[in-house]
Image (cartoon, rainbow over all chains, first blue to last red; front, side, top):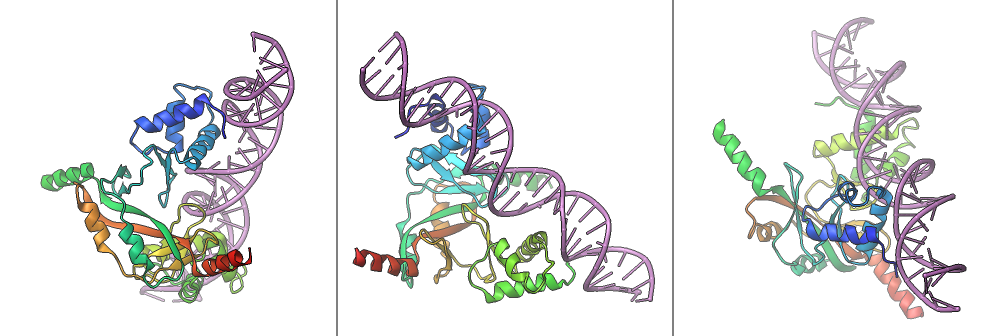
Length: 134
Length: 134
DNA sequence: TGTAAAAATAGGAATCATTACTGTTTATGC
DNA sequence: GCATAAACAGTAATGATTCCTATTTTTACA
């Protein structure tokens, strides 16, 4: 069982109050306001610890740094192809995806990860205005 | 339009005849038998080129190096939690996943990536034998 | 409370995957 | 053939993350 650490508590609080799916680097820079001497390694170590304890989620997108999420209830993510923003999706788990995968598969399917792509609401509106202006 | 290159042709052929979803490193080491002086950078550049041209697929798992696939028709992948092997899934596209995501979402959903996790057929059988032996 | 042991830290070096750079070689079009 | 463009090998550089070590914090309990 890990000991208490002020740095870890601060990181947890940060993720619980920010819904931007920040990278380790972003967490590091923001937490630095409170702990000017905190090191990036400490941020990584605590993000890993919290994720291992199930208190936060790690979101690995194909490219770029991992992102972290204080919302631990299972949910899907959307990545905007235009601005790169990561959004929480407002839909529940879809066990039927695993069910479909079990057809014709002789191993065991325990779960899946799914990320959605497209245009986020903001970029979608922005594009509409730009097209009107042409 | 790119010029012809023997190295790129060899990489393409390699992926068309191996269904192991190799990493760039694996491709590099195997292609080296034919081109002893080929450099890892050349392998990466050609894998990127081929992927951009739609002749191969890049598979980004959350951790570890990317993998490449000569099968370009859209399909899903399975990653064994025990041995790490990547397998092609024998199921067609599931547009209904995108359909579900479009509920309550005011942006545009253009697609999704889904990876399945669990035990591959081999590890599943292996585990059964081990449990029997206990 | 004071102190010893265990855990966490800061700071920096090391690692892994990938891309960028540079001078040389290969392919293409005339 | 020869000029130009593309690709190459070799290597340096980058970005994300982990690892290492000496120091500081936390905890337990005397």
